[in-house]
Length: 118
Image (cartoon, rainbow, N blue to C red; front, side, top):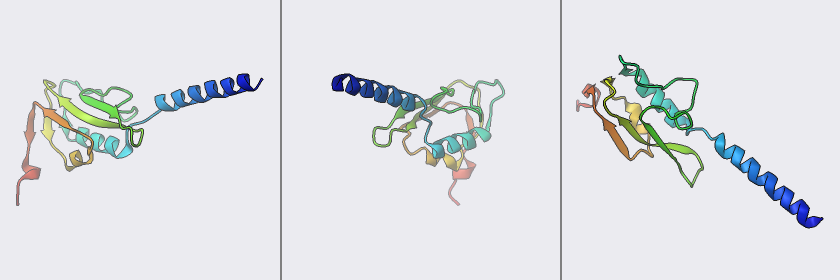
């Protein structure tokens, strides 16, 4: 009887952990940064599927590559790949909030005025 109870408890725990893992959301400061970046972009061809109602990592936003960091269990933005999307705009300071990002690849016309030394 004790073995059956332990087995049931273990199975329930595994199911609960799986549900928690699937419900993970992208680290909130990174979501805020991505939305600020999106606000400065012009997307005349409507290539980006970045909406305010969904999560960047779990919804597979165009060009956003994520991974789950083992130290905190949160999905983080690892790469931004904005290639051949016909985007225009400015890079915003919020880009610095993507502290887990290792690759930034933009192929577009951008203004670097905000980053010129004064």
